[in-house]
Length: 218
Image (cartoon, rainbow, N blue to C red; front, side, top):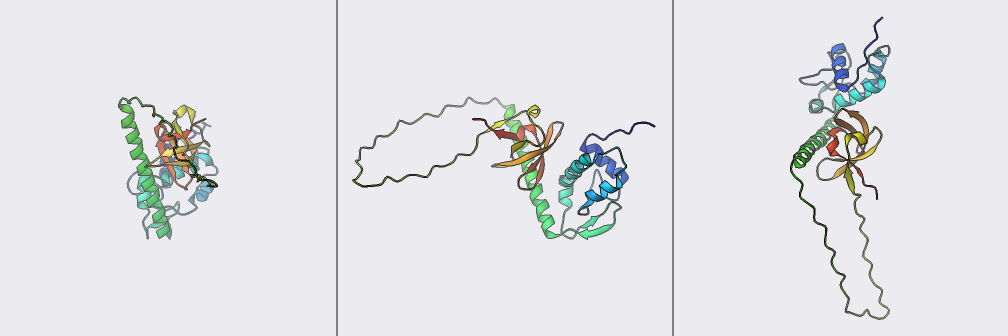
């Protein structure tokens, strides 16, 4: 008996699912909203299938449901289907709202990624060291029994440093630059030149290593 080839990446797994369950999954065109809890159905139906592990199956399913074409398909009233294409529920308003937010975050991450790549292609200008201003002498004498007012100390944001893909690993706490402010998250998977990150706000995004930063060691 020939050895079954293990599927090694998300693209292969999704193509495999589209072949086995064509009424549910697809690799192009409009995606169909999936039944909530469909991973359990997949785990049961593929329990004796040596081509894909549960871990790889879970990661590929997350990748599929975070794709732009799937998020765009999440509209109120849309029909959720099971593995055989049977309609089991409708897409609710909160699901559409969540999908729209996830799509916006993902698109912002891609835009930031392109911006960072364009910036890296240009020669970087030398940074000027900030000039420290000389301390001012207070010529006024404080009044007797007067209590000096203390100004609140502002806590500066943690300094971030860029990393290479070789320095990243699953489970690592990182910062993803998507938009104006970096977003904290945890690396879920390394997929060639891309990094899948579970953000602390509950969303999952796929970005390049150039958009990943870590807290700078003091």
